[in-house]
Structures are given as C-alpha cells and as structure tokens.
Image 1: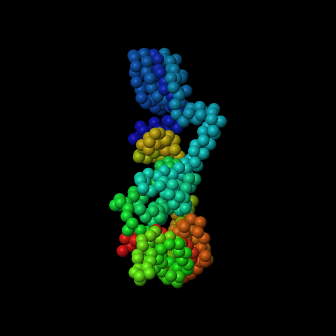
Image 2: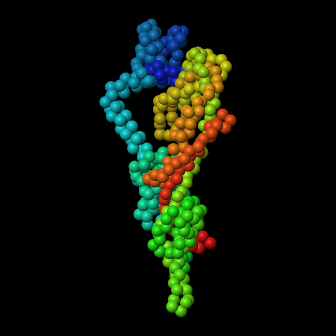
Image 3: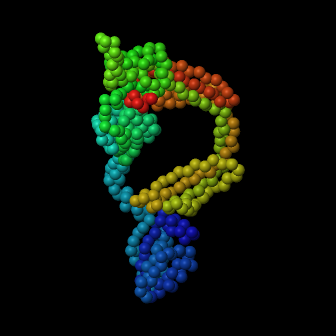
Length: 402
C-alpha cells in the first residue's frame, strides 16, 4: 500500500525513466539511497546497463555522482502530470474546441430526438405516434422529463389504445423505444362493437352524441370504466317489434374533473452550525479502491462532510476510472430552527402547483382551483384541488365492461 501511494504521488510530481550506463551502477544507487532518493522498477538489462524510475526533482541530485562513480545517465522518458500538462497546454485551441464539442454533445444527449415504435401489427404506427404526441411525448423532449412521467405515459397510452395488453418505454441514447404488445383477439365479428366508457371520474356537464345509445345524462356522476354511450341502436318497426342494431358509438362526453394533491411541510428543522475546526483529506480512487495520500487538520465531535471529485482518467469502462477526491470534514453543532408559517406555505404552494401540472393532461388549463391549509404538530398540511372541464369518453369493447 505504501509503495502504491508513493507511485501515485510520483505521478503528480512527475518522474523519469532513466538508463544508467557503467559498471558501477550499484555504487551510484547506494550514494543516492544515502541521500534519501527513492527508486522503483529497477531492472538490470546487462552488467553495464540499469533502467529505473526516479522522481524528476531527484534526478538533479544524481548528476554529481555520475562522474564520481564513472557512470552516466540518460533520460529515456518523462512521465507524470507536470509533463502531461505542458504537452497539453500547447494545444489550448484544440482543447477548447474539444471541450465545446463535448459540452454540445452532452446537451444534445439530454434530449430525445427519435421515437421508434415496435411490436405493432394491427395498429398503425402513425396512430401510436399521434397518441404519444397528444400526451406530450415527442422528439425534442428532455430525457429527464420522460423518465419522470414514464409510468404516466404508459398508463395513459394503454387507456387510449384499448387493444394493447402491455406497453413499455425505454430510453436508448437519443431514441425513445416504445414497445406495444397487442391483444390476441379472435376474428372480428359484428357482435364486437365499441361503446364509449369513462376514462376518469367526473360530473357530466354536456353530451355531444353522434351515434349510439347514451346511458348517462347531464348532472350524473360517473366513475372510471363506466359505460357512457352503448354501442347499440334500438329500431322500432311498424309491427311493433324492436330491433337491436350493433354499431360503433361516437361522440363526446364533457365532464367536470377534479385533481387533488396534499403537501406536508415541516415547521421545525435541524440545521448545522459549522465551526472553524476542519480536516481535509486528499485521496485517489482507482476502480473501487480509495487511497488517501495527504491530510490536513483535526476535528472532534460531530461533523459535516463535503466531497469533491475530479476525474483524472475515465478509460473505456467504470473499472478503469481514476478520480482525485477531496473530503472536507468540518465540526458542526446541530441546532433546531423554526420555519415561519408563511415561508412553509409558500413552499407548499410551489410544490402543489408542480404536482398538479404533472397530473394534468398536456395543454389542459384548469377552470378554477381551491386551497386549504392548517398546522398539525409542527407540520403545515396543505391541500390543493383543481377543477377542469374535459372529454372523458374513450372507446371500449362492450364485452369488457360486463
């Protein structure tokens, strides 16, 4: 472990690969060891040649002993951070261009630019893309926003595409892969007609009927899954007989729909009161191993830790990642702090509006909203209710509702 730490330290200070020429190489090394110079990876190639590694700053100490021992030294390679920094520093324009390219690539990779549909057979890909677009999933959307609403997209897409039994959304680079598994149904017959069912709970305010038999009226309260318009028509003949004709129900059922969120905000929190007592530890992380190599200061009692990372070498995979880690430990006295009710209420309102925005369909604006709040045991309890007016009718097979 000590040797590994020395090598890491030598990398940051810079080291040389040196070839010692002469028959008194061991004598030269003994002089150097007496002066406190450290060597590693010492290899004798021939009786006259020795190759070793030494810190760059120690090489100048060796020079007086070359003549004294009748040997000579030749630098074969300069390695380590100082030499690498000089080499890279000569290409600042190239580095700036590369940095801008990486930043641009990173920003572009934060968006989804392509949507691929797979698994569809009877359904049309264009229909699936249209429904996704209406839900808000379209090219140019942030990956983080899709990940946040992924479950909601899947749930709503299954409601809109009633012929599906399973839907998944995967994010692969800049591509959103939507996989749809359709129901395996027997051959279509005239009996398999479609009714209109409620997609959400609501209070009906208007029915715009195109075809079918309505089973609800204005003012009725319905639950999700209830049949709104039956896919049948009843025709009375001159002889008094009534014929039932199966059809595809069409129309809109407008209803008042309510969305509710509840937020709890604490009125009492514990905050750290930092002191001037701190300890700083520098470490190198190679793969899954963290190797401390320098520390400064001391702490006592409880403390707060902050960690800063800097990638030195990324490699082709995570196992080859090398990082420089700086840990700051600072003594802290934890104290109770009261949060003003007005501040907690403002935070609750912001959080409530964010949640409501997430719940509402894309592009739909609420008609009105109501809020109420109260304090319960050092916690502010906040409730927000938003009312919308929307079409809740969606196609659904009559047989599935029985």
